[in-house]
Length: 256
Image (cartoon, helix red, strand yellow):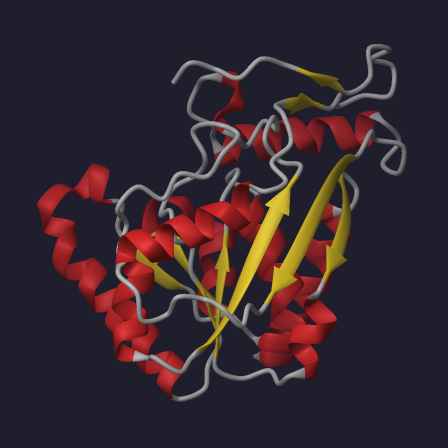
């Protein structure tokens, strides 16, 4: 199963690079300190970054992501997520109060996995950006996990360059996974596969020595926001075809 997952990760990574020019910094340092028992905490600028981050981390870390059930409940994606051990969680906005127990069960699964040395990818915001800046509000998942796993390794992951993509809220409307993939599947062959304009995406990994792991959720969340938002780029449109002469351009942020 692991060789199959690794092969799928490589294939997906290569496909992603037809649209995204991905630059990674800091991951080698994290890998050099060991590849077990890591809680990865990425920001969440769009619906596509979990796919980018998961395929980036899987070959070395076999990291298990948390993901909303409705986002992964698609034939091929559901199969891949099951292979890599994705931990599904319900969307509390859709499921309402009935989701509370399922979310608690998912966090218990995360804690058990970390305690036995597995690696987990958890998005502290629990939702994609609504503006160019990450806003964690009063989310408590990181605080809950650290109370149970006070010595777990913490690696922050900052992704920039995706605010403005069709997978983000930058248009002012809710993005859709299916619509975004359909657009990409049309654009890539239309551009001759290898000639599509590419969006620059930068990923920085940092294992901080001063993370406030014993602090309350407000302190933890403000620390994370400072890291995530320190290099936040503007809303940027990148053409899908080479014959769009306007090129990449900045757009105003939506009023959501």
